[in-house]
Length: 337
Image (cartoon, rainbow, N blue to C red):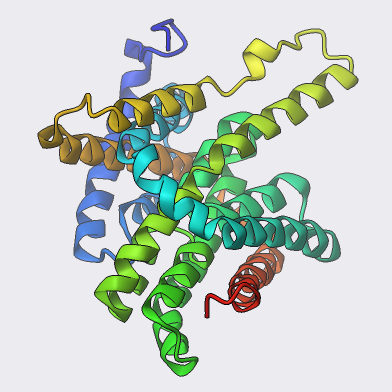
């Protein structure tokens, strides 16, 4: 990633960056106090509230935009250091049929229900990708490619979080009711719950074995964000070229941060990063994504989100239900339950 003027914060960006980091620090602390919610969701909410009740002046906007775009990409790259490609390969092959089925179910449900509910394309895409892959991280990864409005991003992440919370509370009880095995529940949680923190919470509340397996399945599922981002980049590029855009460039459209994400994962897989540094890298990634999502909240319009109505939430419910049911059905068909 080149250190150009577009990627290095300038003095004019400092007021907005200071504001974003200050709010993110509060969100981080609240996330530690209430880990079920997490710092990222607190960041979005606090950013929305600050924007709604005390909107930052124009001098803050360059820094806020920088954090919501560039720092967002940096956070995704840093997350790559937490993903060992070797670690997930074995479990990934075991769970591949279930994972691919749930991703397909999420895509179909998002498209069909989104049309029925008249949810516009970009918000429909964000909710579909977030439910299919890994919640807020997946939404964060596709934002630089599809360039939705900030309020759409905030709405999508908030919707995903709502059903994460429901899943953490509901899944363990349903798993015991259905007499799922530890591995069966781990595979269900890993393929049907979105954010990693929620997968961990639900999995380990069921059993240690279920939690271990669910976490690895979830990491495997997260790798699918790479091909999805590449496909989205090609679609965006094709649409720009078809519309006759004079500034079309595949080099510009290509999500380079995903390439650096892969490099980070390869570095982790090769063991080139000392184990003692990994917790600090994870901490840095967590902080960066909270700052980025806080900035998205600071850029979003709460009144505009409210005017959207309940349709995106109904869409999120429908997509999430389709993923949860598909995971169970495919496990039953292949004899995993």
